[in-house]
Image 1 (cartoon, rainbow, N blue to C red):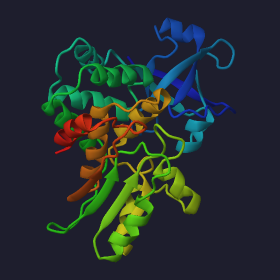
Image 2: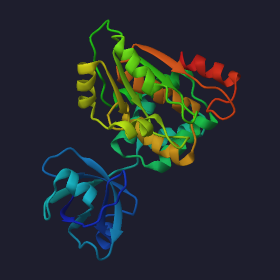
Image 3: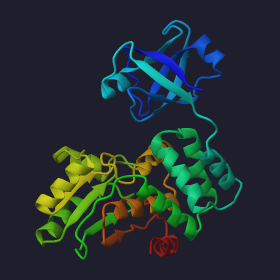
Image 4: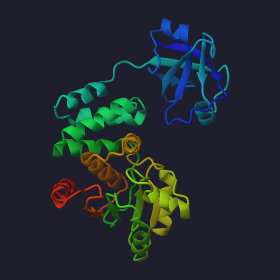
Length: 310
């Protein structure tokens, strides 16, 4: 059943990467809505936005929904505007995550459900953490790895280039502090006439990633459309992957793994290959540093990863 409330703009910014709203405590109790619950929010016939609920007994009155600056600035919302809200039921993706924790493989449909809900914001850091941990304890089968990679690609934007054209890329799995070959190699490859739409991450397991280093020299945050314009004009780019909407589920997952300082191999493979597929890459050089201080401790692990990447 829908609940109709009036927006109340709050002079507070959450600074969070998720949308949060405030409901009156008594009204929420009457509707069986609790702190941390996810609801869908819709206004003016707009696409539904998933938000997380906070409660207050004095910040908003019954009939109101408090919206933080993060939301009302982004969507240009006004006080007293009518919002339609629905409480989200139990997600099928949660059942899929539980299934994998118990040791069963996931189907293509189940993997897609999880990634859809990650991208839509219906899964927060807790179930995402369990999803990541499940692959750490029980590595994915080759089918699961393919299903995960595919789901990350289709739930986001993709770049299209003329058929038959070589779209090149190089990628290091990272883990070596100060290793910045990308910033040198990309201009060389582009100067030789190849197309190289290069995206990269920020730091995950070290103080500064390629994105952090490049940003000292030039802006790295662009939309997918801006990235395509740059590549069409000069044949190359150096762009932070978290700014474009290529395999966006990866960026949500990276935020969780960063806090754990953990790089799960299967997640890493899906993450890299999904970004490459979404960017239209046809030819890839993959660089895997091996050693005690890298992400890959020895050649035995490297050989196993090589097989999975192939």
